[in-house]
Amino acid sequence: MSLDLTLRLIEAVNATPAGSTTLVDVDGPADVAIANRWTAATGNSLLVVHPHAVEIMRGRMVDPIGALPENRRPGYRLWVYTNFHCNLACDYCCVSSSPRAARRVISVEETAALVRDAADTGVRELYITGGEPFMLLDLDERLHAATSALPTTVLTNGMLWQGERLRRLDALPRDRLTLQVSLDSATPELHDRHRGAGSFDRALAGVRLALDLGFRVRVAATLGHDAGNSESELGSLFDGLGLDDDQRVVRRVARQGEANAGLTVTRASLVPEVCVTADGVWWHPVAATDPSMMVADAWSPLDAAVEAIRDEYRRHRLRSDILASTFPCA
Amino acid sequence: MSGGAEVVVGAVAYTANVVPIWEGIKEYFAGSPAPMDFVLFSNYERQVDALVAGHIDIAWNTNVAWVRASRRTDGAARPLAMRDTDLAFQTFMIARAGAGIDGLESCKGRRVALGSRDSGQARILPLHFLQREGIEASDVELVIFDSDVGKHGDTGRSDLDALRAVLDDQADVAAVGGNTWQALLAAGDETVAALTVAWESEPYNHCNFTAMPSLSDERAEAWVSHLLDMDWDNPDHRPILEMEGLREWKRPELSGYDSLIEAMAAQGIADGW
Ligand code: SF4
Image (tube, rainbow over all chains, first blue to last red; front, side, top):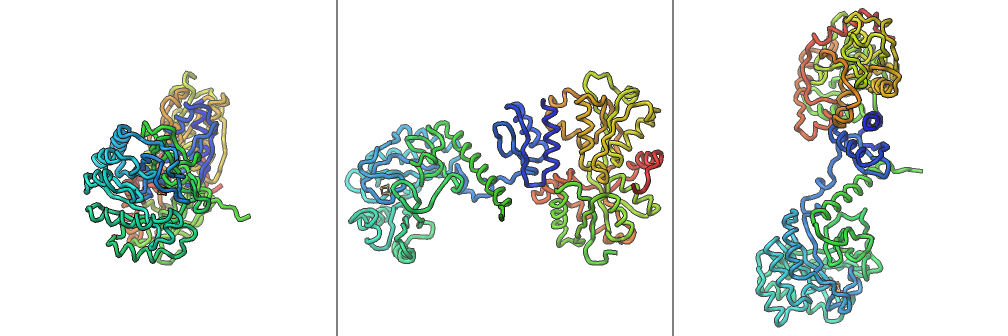
């Protein structure tokens, strides 16, 4: 009975210190609705709906998403895997791409619909990735759709710009498109060890070509366990290419896909970046083939998927804050 | 005398949340013209003792504690400020809808659930309001919930017990404070559809900050004017105001204590237990 529930809510929350949580038994969605209304009206927060109870925090919750910098908030950025096949087969590829990988292509039409929805959902920037996106001869059509909706970055190994592909690249708009080229080290040895012989020279040539064509270029290095302190050498290379700070990305390899060592990522430990592949929606692009990181098996409706990711992130954050504050010493 | 640079404010620890509330208020006063510290007491009687003895400069008192402080100092203790909600506190008599109880007169011969003996809103004033209508304690069957004595009804425990008694058919009507009734209404109108307000009192005063004459007018004014500057729309102030149950601090209006002063005199309520 709702009145009894309300009395129990008042009683339980009265006895709870601010910032702590309490469980109140509920029986069905009508009770949950009452608990929701009551907590909102009394300045308290309903954190989690369990099967037979609601978990309420005394006091108003600080939204963990509001606490993130704007461009890190889930839904600010949308990642799109246009395909999964690649001309390379890097030994630490986080999604196990290779020339033999199943292609899992998102068509031009679907990409156009997705980026329109993304703009409507409040997404502010697009990241197109793969696989190697430029394996798709008609990638440029997707990039035209993407850039006309939102500022777009495309991730590439920078090795395929010849002939027809080069002609199509050159026809792309410069003002809304950034080319992010992978380059893992300052000299060929390390880069080629993981990505294949000759790949360093071709990637570096790709960076120079893109710069010459007047594109905005960002260079991204992935450091494996054997990278040592190659960061400073990379810095000199980037300086030589005339790259500003916001045109360089250096990160450690994550233990995903082909990488059997590296940073462990889980939904509870990783700020999400909404990611769409032909198979559905994922928590983060670094784990777009890990079944435990799949959020939905279809991207539409996108706003619902983004909201689900935000909600789950809030729950993880609140949970970890609470766990941290009750850490047992024995 | 507390003597130091800080104004020392006493409060009663009726819930664990008193600590974050007062830490927040103390922080708010840091760097102001009247920085403060606070001391917590386990009950209002100890706090009034400390106020009268000069161990604290200001006490955050319930209405019952204020009347006692005023009586014990022959009116020298003075209220400095109150919550907006303290200026319009009410007691509600709540019955089951359809029980045929409407107005105090209809409580005659019925089971009336009342809260703790030191709760102004749930015991002392309801008895007074009944007596004012010519209904003596002997004209009704009293169902008493003496819980959390010393906290003057702050915990709301006895209000909830009295309401439960009505729902469990152990009582026909329960006296509860307006804060408890508001908390019930917060779940939505249909939640309280089984209940009806049989009677509601006129507004009366609840808590106030009580100061002794040893706190100079100048220091008191510096402290009060900074208190009144707390702003509901300021996200730093808002959590404190919400937890303490107000939107705005106000200067006191004393007439709202008349009914309680009368009630405590008529019921022979002592200056301590
Ligand atoms: S890391 Fe990039 S370039 Fe290497 S296989 Fe994977 S998708 Fe291709």
